[in-house]
Image 1 (cartoon, one colour):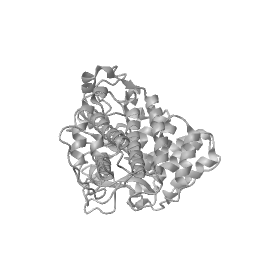
Image 2: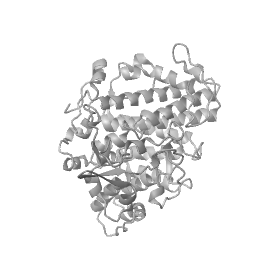
Image 3: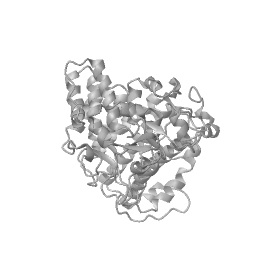
Image 4: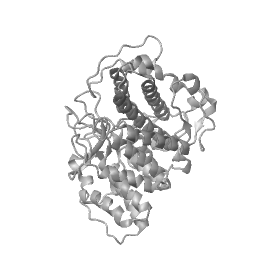
Length: 459
């Protein structure tokens, strides 16, 4: 595949950079011709440099990024949480918002290309660690574990967005250029095996107090997401119980401080690449006294809140422009001289609501309410009563998840998908069709590698 063929150059270039947003690194000499993982990973410093390059890529271009090509924006507008206003983005994000994407859509192609670039980087790190004899075992285990978690998250999104996708753990171009698709179910099985191994390789303690690198609890939460998608609710419950009971995290009762980087509810976050810069989310959703530049909250999202909900009051800002009223998303508030916000990827509230769903799916109402009601109470809403039916409880968990996680990692889309309720989008999205549960495979990739055929249904 073309997307895999460019990765050597991407990784070789990134290895020579100093990433001041993560940690102080030594410079790495650029190999003169091709990637030689044994040469590159001749020490912990060189392996760590490659890993830091991957983290920086995750913040800049991945589906975890809070920017234009992140899942928060693309899947948030693809579903029913965001309205898109970038009228110049024809055949790109605007078409995704309107649910009229085609196989030549440039945003679809960028998501695919970026994801496989990051997978290549992770594979190169894992291969390099495996061949190195110079790196202490403890360092090698941690670096490999972190790379496996990041790769697993990327593959999880690819399987949820595209369905059957090429799955590779090697860096050999001769192999990768002719890959066939792996079923989405098998991809999830592969991810779960990797995450089970990663859990054994990582520690609970963070190697940076800002929690900008994944730890064991990040791996456990990621694995719980996979189990939830597979309907393995008891397995997800066990993992999520470890996360919510961990002394590493504390409940954040103040809505306004949910996204402050020192908050105890944060499990994993990505630091701005340039020190002092605003998060990509803060910049993407910012506008003032004018029409939105890219996105604003949909009326459907705003209508889902009760008037007394503190999230409606704290996480949105009403902007009047002429005869129109928009709702700016205001979760991240620091636009300049940012020293208190990072892009939150996972936070404790997600573990709570996932655990509430896991219990509800097993018919355990009281246990589910024990994790659903704290989220409601924090938002200034009354607790739900114990006489609620199981089906109504599942609906409340879905609704609460939407109100809590709009613009975050496409969680609304993921929750609807694992609950079998994507058809609900047709209410607010007039162009929504059932085949939109998957995006098309990029036409350029099908041309380069016919083994990726057939195209997804409907395209």
